[in-house]
Length: 413
Image (cartoon, rainbow, N blue to C red; front, top):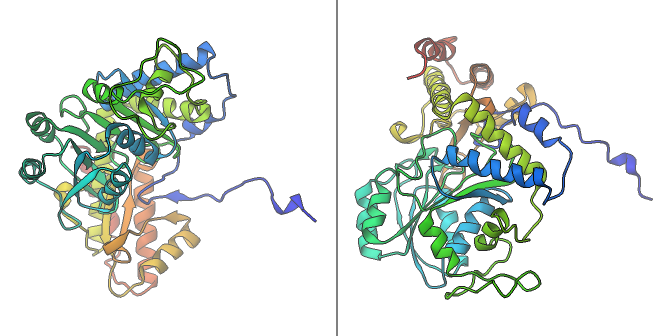
């Protein structure tokens, strides 16, 4: 017999999430999400949608009209852009420097693209010349990049790639899920045609909504595949002259029409996630985007200093690490998962492991969003050192904390 008492009200334990994401949501975001629902075409609701577009233009540093949300996790934004932009048979180039470059390849193949890759060892990034040489050789229609790959903690420089793409007639996309809001991203100045992101990392919200922005060139490419579904189309709706987009839900042409003045019915906007996304952006812009990026850089730098002061080795080229995530080489004398288990059980602190060739070799420690704070950094360093000492790893007591304090004494750069 079914017993409802086996399913008590959800009451998750307190955790300090110091991994590569998700992180603890800002309480102001959670309060916004608790607001009552309203109808999807209520003037207040469409007003909030318009406000979200304005707010995210500021975060993406763009004037792109089509700056909006795709309902779903960060991957929904990636898939929407790739499915809408890639025609079957299109050549795409993907510079792979971690697990999420491979994800772009996987999605592009499912779009029936002809996928070409270049690769560097995990922990490194590409030079503009390496990417331009590959563009010359492959002649792709699209360049698909990851700005910040959390699997390696590396941040790919993008500033010179837009000009390269323009010279070669290539559409330029980046996945900024892990880096957005905590590292510099200049959509218009860098010549990006499409960017997608998520709320659950530097933006301080939950997973479930993907902000995207599309250049006029990308909009034009998507509109050429226009196909308005039966039941809502009128005589005024004309199909595009190219092959339709092979997804209804991720058809950015229809999503643009839903977010635009026509308000053409496509889906029912995820109201609570819209509230969350709006509050995430409002909080960041209230602080100041540059100030928020500087905050991520400061706390990330303090974490690096503390880890090095503890006698641990950092992973990858620190000149190209994200502000908000650090890779730490797991010492040979301890078991990485045992350390993570004790941190979670005894201190309620979560840090991450990694994927593929780095699985079991590095931890990933995040300082992002609501958790890019001095108290979070110091708590994590103190707890990690205590666990490592308990398991036999020797450190000089106080060095890690002092190294972090020294960074805080110097302040933001």
